[in-house]
Length: 301
Image (tube, rainbow, N blue to C red):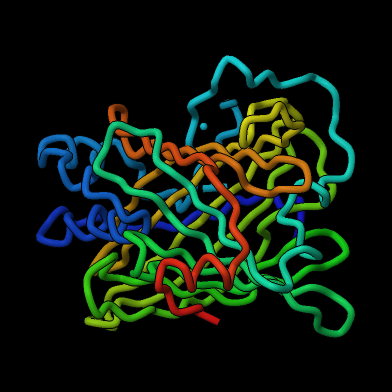
Protein backbone atom coordinates (compact mmCIF):
# COMPACT_ATOMS: atom_id res chain seq x y z
CA UNK A 1 0.00 0.00 0.00
CA UNK A 2 0.96 3.69 -0.11
CA UNK A 3 4.28 4.64 1.46
CA UNK A 4 5.69 1.15 1.23
CA UNK A 5 9.49 1.12 1.32
CA UNK A 6 10.75 -1.60 -0.89
CA UNK A 7 13.69 -3.85 -0.18
CA UNK A 8 13.83 -7.24 -1.82
CA UNK A 9 16.89 -9.39 -2.39
CA UNK A 10 17.10 -12.24 -4.83
CA UNK A 11 20.21 -14.32 -5.48
CA UNK A 12 20.81 -15.31 -9.08
CA UNK A 13 23.60 -16.67 -11.20
CA UNK A 14 23.48 -14.65 -14.38
CA UNK A 15 24.42 -16.42 -17.57
CA UNK A 16 25.58 -14.09 -20.32
CA UNK A 17 24.46 -16.23 -23.21
CA UNK A 18 21.93 -15.90 -25.99
CA UNK A 19 19.34 -14.45 -23.58
CA UNK A 20 21.25 -11.16 -23.21
CA UNK A 21 19.17 -9.47 -25.87
CA UNK A 22 15.82 -10.23 -24.23
CA UNK A 23 15.89 -7.48 -21.61
CA UNK A 24 16.70 -4.82 -24.21
CA UNK A 25 14.05 -6.10 -26.57
CA UNK A 26 11.52 -6.01 -23.75
CA UNK A 27 12.37 -2.41 -22.87
CA UNK A 28 11.87 -1.50 -26.52
CA UNK A 29 8.49 -3.19 -26.54
CA UNK A 30 7.30 -1.53 -23.35
CA UNK A 31 8.19 2.04 -24.26
CA UNK A 32 7.90 1.60 -28.03
CA UNK A 33 11.15 3.21 -29.06
CA UNK A 34 13.23 2.30 -32.07
CA UNK A 35 16.15 4.34 -30.76
CA UNK A 36 16.75 1.91 -27.91
CA UNK A 37 17.62 -0.86 -30.32
CA UNK A 38 20.38 1.32 -31.73
CA UNK A 39 22.50 0.88 -28.59
CA UNK A 40 25.59 -1.07 -29.55
CA UNK A 41 26.29 -4.60 -28.37
CA UNK A 42 29.38 -3.33 -26.58
CA UNK A 43 27.28 -0.87 -24.58
CA UNK A 44 24.75 -3.57 -23.75
CA UNK A 45 27.41 -5.92 -22.41
CA UNK A 46 28.94 -3.15 -20.31
CA UNK A 47 25.53 -2.34 -18.83
CA UNK A 48 24.93 -5.91 -17.75
CA UNK A 49 28.39 -6.29 -16.24
CA UNK A 50 27.65 -3.26 -14.05
CA UNK A 51 24.35 -4.69 -12.80
CA UNK A 52 24.59 -6.40 -9.40
CA UNK A 53 22.21 -9.25 -10.00
CA UNK A 54 22.04 -10.24 -6.33
CA UNK A 55 19.70 -7.26 -5.84
CA UNK A 56 16.23 -7.35 -7.29
CA UNK A 57 15.94 -3.61 -6.97
CA UNK A 58 18.15 -0.88 -5.46
CA UNK A 59 16.13 1.92 -3.94
CA UNK A 60 17.98 5.10 -4.85
CA UNK A 61 16.49 8.27 -3.41
CA UNK A 62 19.41 10.64 -3.97
CA UNK A 63 18.17 11.91 -7.35
CA UNK A 64 15.88 14.84 -8.16
CA UNK A 65 6.00 7.71 -12.81
CA UNK A 66 7.15 6.75 -16.19
CA UNK A 67 15.22 11.29 -12.76
CA UNK A 68 12.47 8.52 -15.05
CA UNK A 69 12.44 11.25 -17.50
CA UNK A 70 14.46 14.29 -16.37
CA UNK A 71 14.44 17.28 -18.66
CA UNK A 72 13.60 20.39 -16.63
CA UNK A 73 12.74 23.61 -18.40
CA UNK A 74 13.85 26.86 -16.85
CA UNK A 75 10.22 27.45 -15.87
CA UNK A 76 10.25 24.47 -13.46
CA UNK A 77 11.40 25.28 -9.94
CA UNK A 78 10.90 22.85 -7.05
CA UNK A 79 9.98 24.46 -3.74
CA UNK A 80 11.12 23.28 -0.33
CA UNK A 81 7.75 23.12 1.36
CA UNK A 82 5.77 19.93 1.82
CA UNK A 83 2.83 19.52 -0.52
CA UNK A 84 -0.74 19.24 0.62
CA UNK A 85 -3.29 16.73 -0.67
CA UNK A 86 -2.36 15.49 -4.13
CA UNK A 87 -5.74 14.22 -5.30
CA UNK A 88 -6.41 17.34 -7.37
CA UNK A 89 -3.19 16.76 -9.32
CA UNK A 90 -4.26 13.43 -10.75
CA UNK A 91 -6.48 13.03 -13.80
CA UNK A 92 -9.84 14.71 -13.05
CA UNK A 93 -11.97 11.57 -12.90
CA UNK A 94 -15.22 13.51 -12.48
CA UNK A 95 -14.67 15.07 -15.91
CA UNK A 96 -13.77 11.84 -17.69
CA UNK A 97 -17.03 9.92 -17.64
CA UNK A 98 -17.56 10.75 -21.32
CA UNK A 99 -13.91 10.03 -22.11
CA UNK A 100 -10.88 12.20 -22.81
CA UNK A 101 -7.90 11.89 -25.13
CA UNK A 102 -4.55 13.23 -23.92
CA UNK A 103 -2.07 13.69 -26.74
CA UNK A 104 1.61 13.62 -25.75
CA UNK A 105 4.30 14.66 -28.20
CA UNK A 106 7.96 13.71 -28.04
CA UNK A 107 10.47 16.45 -27.26
CA UNK A 108 13.33 14.02 -27.83
CA UNK A 109 15.58 13.86 -30.87
CA UNK A 110 14.41 10.35 -31.68
CA UNK A 111 12.10 8.69 -34.17
CA UNK A 112 9.28 8.66 -31.63
CA UNK A 113 5.91 9.93 -32.68
CA UNK A 114 3.01 11.08 -30.56
CA UNK A 115 1.13 9.01 -28.03
CA UNK A 116 -2.62 9.11 -27.53
CA UNK A 117 -3.83 8.25 -24.04
CA UNK A 118 -7.52 7.28 -24.07
CA UNK A 119 -9.00 7.78 -20.59
CA UNK A 120 -12.55 7.07 -19.41
CA UNK A 121 -13.93 6.90 -15.88
CA UNK A 122 -17.04 5.43 -14.31
CA UNK A 123 -18.34 4.94 -10.79
CA UNK A 124 -18.56 1.60 -9.05
CA UNK A 125 -19.71 1.21 -5.44
CA UNK A 126 -19.28 4.94 -4.88
CA UNK A 127 -15.68 5.18 -6.11
CA UNK A 128 -14.22 5.90 -9.51
CA UNK A 129 -12.66 3.37 -11.84
CA UNK A 130 -10.36 4.74 -14.57
CA UNK A 131 -9.79 2.84 -17.79
CA UNK A 132 -6.82 3.75 -19.95
CA UNK A 133 -5.22 2.77 -23.24
CA UNK A 134 -2.24 4.08 -25.18
CA UNK A 135 -2.24 4.32 -28.95
CA UNK A 136 1.14 4.56 -30.67
CA UNK A 137 1.30 5.68 -34.30
CA UNK A 138 -2.41 6.51 -34.14
CA UNK A 139 -3.93 3.05 -34.53
CA UNK A 140 -1.92 0.52 -32.48
CA UNK A 141 -2.78 -0.11 -28.82
CA UNK A 142 0.41 -0.85 -26.88
CA UNK A 143 -0.87 -0.61 -23.29
CA UNK A 144 -4.26 -0.99 -21.65
CA UNK A 145 -5.13 -0.83 -17.95
CA UNK A 146 -7.72 -0.22 -15.26
CA UNK A 147 -7.20 1.71 -12.01
CA UNK A 148 -9.29 2.03 -8.88
CA UNK A 149 -9.74 5.01 -6.57
CA UNK A 150 -9.24 4.43 -2.84
CA UNK A 151 -9.17 6.78 0.14
CA UNK A 152 -5.38 6.97 0.00
CA UNK A 153 -4.77 7.06 -3.76
CA UNK A 154 -5.05 5.30 -7.10
CA UNK A 155 -4.19 1.61 -7.37
CA UNK A 156 -3.71 -0.61 -10.41
CA UNK A 157 -6.39 -3.24 -10.93
CA UNK A 158 -5.45 -4.65 -14.34
CA UNK A 159 -2.66 -4.09 -16.83
CA UNK A 160 -1.88 -5.53 -20.27
CA UNK A 161 0.80 -4.69 -22.82
CA UNK A 162 1.72 -5.59 -26.38
CA UNK A 163 4.85 -7.73 -26.29
CA UNK A 164 5.39 -7.04 -29.98
CA UNK A 165 5.22 -3.28 -29.50
CA UNK A 166 3.50 -1.58 -32.43
CA UNK A 167 3.72 -4.58 -34.75
CA UNK A 168 0.61 -5.23 -36.78
CA UNK A 169 -1.69 -7.78 -35.21
CA UNK A 170 0.11 -7.79 -31.87
CA UNK A 171 -2.01 -9.04 -28.98
CA UNK A 172 -2.07 -7.70 -25.45
CA UNK A 173 -0.50 -9.82 -22.71
CA UNK A 174 -2.08 -9.64 -19.25
CA UNK A 175 0.09 -9.12 -16.18
CA UNK A 176 -0.14 -10.07 -12.52
CA UNK A 177 -0.14 -7.08 -10.17
CA UNK A 178 2.08 -7.66 -7.12
CA UNK A 179 2.11 -4.16 -5.57
CA UNK A 180 -0.52 -1.77 -6.87
CA UNK A 181 0.39 1.83 -5.91
CA UNK A 182 0.01 4.25 -8.83
CA UNK A 183 -0.56 7.70 -7.34
CA UNK A 184 -0.88 8.81 -3.67
CA UNK A 185 -3.36 11.42 -2.51
CA UNK A 186 -1.12 12.37 0.42
CA UNK A 187 2.67 12.15 0.62
CA UNK A 188 5.64 13.52 2.51
CA UNK A 189 8.70 14.59 0.59
CA UNK A 190 10.81 11.54 -0.10
CA UNK A 191 7.84 9.18 0.35
CA UNK A 192 8.17 6.06 -1.80
CA UNK A 193 5.26 4.30 -3.52
CA UNK A 194 5.74 0.85 -4.98
CA UNK A 195 4.34 -0.69 -8.12
CA UNK A 196 5.35 -4.21 -9.17
CA UNK A 197 3.95 -6.50 -11.86
CA UNK A 198 4.93 -9.81 -13.49
CA UNK A 199 4.04 -11.59 -16.71
CA UNK A 200 5.25 -14.35 -18.99
CA UNK A 201 6.21 -14.30 -22.64
CA UNK A 202 3.20 -15.55 -24.64
CA UNK A 203 5.58 -17.15 -27.15
CA UNK A 204 7.56 -18.99 -24.45
CA UNK A 205 5.99 -19.57 -21.04
CA UNK A 206 9.42 -20.36 -19.56
CA UNK A 207 10.45 -16.71 -19.91
CA UNK A 208 9.21 -14.45 -17.13
CA UNK A 209 9.31 -10.68 -16.78
CA UNK A 210 9.04 -8.36 -13.80
CA UNK A 211 8.76 -4.58 -13.62
CA UNK A 212 9.48 -2.95 -10.24
CA UNK A 213 8.79 0.78 -10.13
CA UNK A 214 9.22 3.16 -7.20
CA UNK A 215 7.71 6.62 -7.38
CA UNK A 216 9.46 9.06 -5.03
CA UNK A 217 7.59 12.24 -4.18
CA UNK A 218 9.83 15.29 -4.65
CA UNK A 219 7.45 18.13 -3.90
CA UNK A 220 5.60 20.89 -5.69
CA UNK A 221 6.76 22.96 -8.62
CA UNK A 222 5.50 25.37 -11.26
CA UNK A 223 5.72 24.84 -15.02
CA UNK A 224 4.24 25.82 -18.35
CA UNK A 225 1.35 23.53 -19.30
CA UNK A 226 -0.73 24.05 -22.44
CA UNK A 227 0.47 27.63 -22.69
CA UNK A 228 -0.22 28.57 -19.05
CA UNK A 229 1.82 28.60 -15.87
CA UNK A 230 0.45 25.83 -13.65
CA UNK A 231 1.04 24.41 -10.20
CA UNK A 232 2.41 20.88 -10.48
CA UNK A 233 3.72 17.94 -8.45
CA UNK A 234 6.99 16.19 -9.18
CA UNK A 235 7.84 12.51 -8.78
CA UNK A 236 11.10 10.81 -9.66
CA UNK A 237 11.05 7.21 -10.81
CA UNK A 238 13.37 4.30 -10.11
CA UNK A 239 12.65 1.22 -12.19
CA UNK A 240 14.07 -2.21 -12.62
CA UNK A 241 13.06 -4.60 -15.38
CA UNK A 242 14.08 -8.24 -15.06
CA UNK A 243 13.91 -11.18 -17.43
CA UNK A 244 14.06 -14.67 -15.94
CA UNK A 245 15.29 -17.15 -18.55
CA UNK A 246 17.79 -19.68 -17.18
CA UNK A 247 19.07 -16.93 -14.91
CA UNK A 248 18.03 -13.34 -14.28
CA UNK A 249 19.01 -10.38 -16.42
CA UNK A 250 18.15 -6.91 -15.17
CA UNK A 251 18.27 -3.30 -16.22
CA UNK A 252 17.83 -0.19 -14.04
CA UNK A 253 16.08 2.88 -15.45
CA UNK A 254 15.29 6.33 -14.11
CA UNK A 255 12.71 8.92 -14.89
CA UNK A 256 10.56 11.88 -13.85
CA UNK A 257 6.83 12.58 -13.86
CA UNK A 258 4.98 15.89 -13.50
CA UNK A 259 1.29 16.23 -12.66
CA UNK A 260 -0.54 19.57 -13.03
CA UNK A 261 -3.50 20.64 -10.92
CA UNK A 262 -6.87 19.60 -12.37
CA UNK A 263 -5.14 18.06 -15.42
CA UNK A 264 -3.07 15.03 -14.40
CA UNK A 265 0.11 13.79 -16.03
CA UNK A 266 1.59 16.58 -18.17
CA UNK A 267 5.19 15.47 -18.69
CA UNK A 268 7.26 12.32 -18.36
CA UNK A 269 10.88 11.61 -19.09
CA UNK A 270 12.79 8.34 -19.31
CA UNK A 271 16.56 7.84 -19.47
CA UNK A 272 17.26 4.63 -21.35
CA UNK A 273 21.02 5.03 -21.02
CA UNK A 274 23.59 7.81 -20.65
CA UNK A 275 22.89 9.09 -24.15
CA UNK A 276 19.27 8.23 -24.83
CA UNK A 277 16.46 10.18 -23.22
CA UNK A 278 12.77 10.17 -24.05
CA UNK A 279 10.67 13.20 -23.16
CA UNK A 280 6.91 13.36 -23.66
CA UNK A 281 4.88 16.51 -23.00
CA UNK A 282 1.11 16.98 -22.98
CA UNK A 283 0.18 18.78 -26.19
CA UNK A 284 -3.64 18.79 -26.33
CA UNK A 285 -6.68 17.40 -24.49
CA UNK A 286 -9.61 16.29 -26.67
CA UNK A 287 -13.14 15.13 -25.93
CA UNK A 288 -12.81 11.38 -26.25
CA UNK A 289 -15.55 10.07 -28.53
CA UNK A 290 -15.61 13.15 -30.75
CA UNK A 291 -11.88 13.07 -31.36
CA UNK A 292 -11.70 9.32 -31.97
CA UNK A 293 -14.47 9.53 -34.54
CA UNK A 294 -12.70 12.43 -36.28
CA UNK A 295 -9.50 10.41 -36.74
CA UNK A 296 -11.21 7.10 -37.46
CA UNK A 297 -10.21 5.27 -34.27
CA UNK A 298 -12.40 2.63 -32.66
CA UNK A 299 -12.84 3.29 -28.92
CA UNK A 300 -10.97 0.61 -26.91
CA UNK A 301 -13.74 0.47 -24.27
